[in-house]
Length: 94
Length: 194
Image (cartoon, rainbow over all chains, first blue to last red; front, top):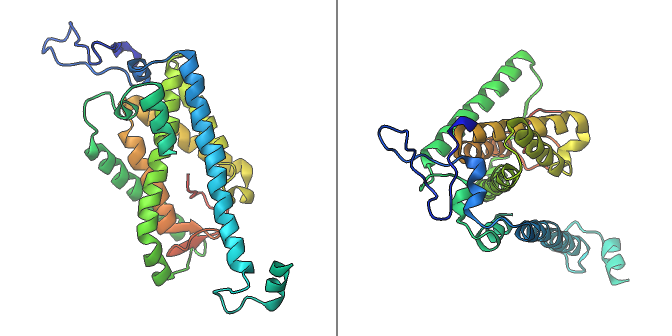
């Protein structure tokens, strides 16, 4: 896999292999594609922080919102489901 | 998850989102379709074989009305979910690790372990954490390997989508929080939605 490494650069992301008789474009190695962008450690930390923020904070907020709406549906004083008991709605009022 | 990867790659690393999927100029949709078809065939064949060898393992839990109601939701959300996971674990993570090392076993191992760890909150894990963690790590390693061997992500996207859609729509574990599928299995099933 690594014997066909062709390193992409900002100027030439699809470098041509000079040893290729047909002069076909040699694709860069998949794991090296990050080099097409900016890869300073500050950007990597920012990217990881962004991913974790979206995932854990916004994801947890969305999950809590769904759980809250479910709880509200089951304990509402005017439930949509006819089998919700009266004692449940009494707890809601307290 | 798609949004977080898109923001990180497009605005922080300042490179096209397409570079998470392929080094060529276009996404190869035929590869995605081929991997999808092959994975569905393999999953169906293994389930059929298991059902034939161990009668009673599967039972029909058909609820057509509920199934049809959920079908469009499952098709859209599962496809988005699996694509997002591929972009994050096999796309972003593999390429970020690729800046540090080129050792295939290390790239595959780390991405698979992270993939497995991130699935430990799933409901089916309670049925057998060690077995299911092993399954997730194995599945993650398989997807990472085909990504590295093919030098692009399309096969992993197709295979992952096929696995999860098969689990969601055809064969599922009979845990309380699972959506109804036409056929159910006990929670110790090897078919888990990764």
